[in-house]
Length: 85
Image (tube, rainbow, N blue to C red; front, side):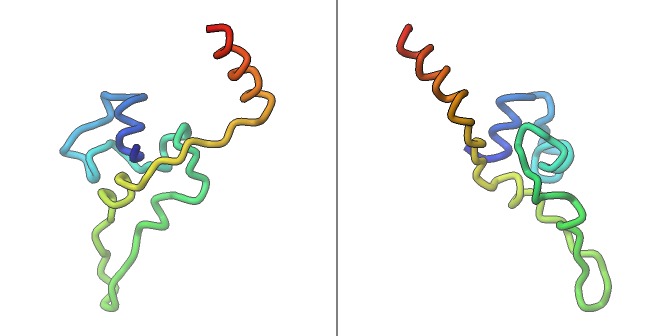
């Protein structure tokens, strides 16, 4: 699942082909994606003449989404609950 697909799952109204990358804003704007190392300032770059380069939103949004690891106590509760069902 990509970052774009995760946002589509959680907040479907943020998906729109008119936005760069197909989603409103930057992946860093969505706290549930847990992207501590991604923010818009990283994406802004200039060529050797000092002109702004296009953002690579599509590439960033299509990066594979990684589910955050659950603490062991939380996983134990989920495992116990799943055995009951």
